[in-house]
Image (tube, rainbow, N blue to C red; front, top):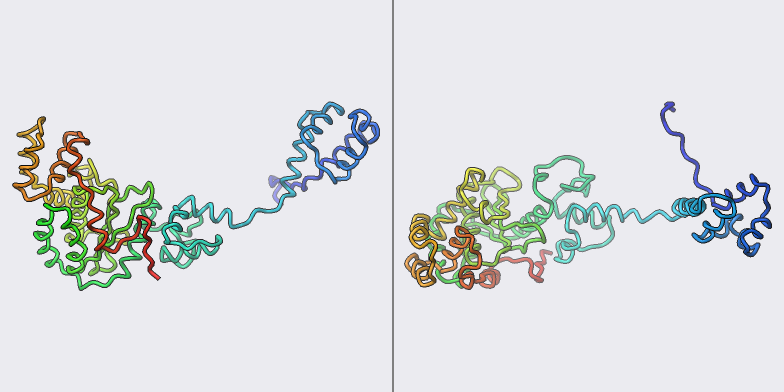
Length: 379
């Protein structure tokens, strides 16, 4: 053994052994100590014979009697108790590791995992992430190697894989870029009435695009995703994190542009869109090029940019409700769409909020949906 290696430490002994040694050093008997403490002989005898532990009160009393620190025997007892305690279930560290990385309890609640002991959970997690064992699951502390998913927060990755799971179970016609392009005017015509959004899943399916709605996980801040099961099988996933008509159409058109451009076709993670609001929904240079392209297409789809710019400059800072309604009618869109634009540009997020109608209620009945206390069973 190298000289700088520490020698193995002997296991701690019961405090009674050391108490006996302290008495011997002082030439004292158990009866002497019993007299000093004013307690029964049995109390001291049971401690020395290891049949009874040293309580905090007794530790203080022994300290007084033997001129030792008041916590000396308490510390010995604590060390002995910890050493003597049963080893915790090995599954505790496994479950802690999984929960630290992924929202396991939420995934169980939603039916993505079935629960069970730690080993069973690890097997389920590996199956969920399409790897052979838990040691290969991205982000777990014991994961064997780096993956292309390491830059994606675990909570977003879990959501992405749930969308992937569902998408794989769907059957749609062969993807047609020309059909999807041709469908844009039909989709654009739906912007005037919230109820028309119910047709979106069907239209996308007819174009060969798998459309999946999965409720976002807490703190994921994810809005949508575009990825490809293979080079001819695009998927659009949406979370309805913001249940507003302007956000729905913006995110949807954003993801459609990713599909039309083939964005994410060569990457396993595709195009994950989180925080698709404010600056991240703009076209500034600090926004990645693919996202700028998708943002521009989405913005112009919802409210033609030139028309919106002109309206904003002419009316700012007095945006009267009647003018907004008239502008929306002229452009064949619901008032909630220009209202959303005005709110962001003017940073007046309460302005005409009544027009930002909820739209999930119209979409999810006709879409493959998982969440909102209605888990989707894929078995």
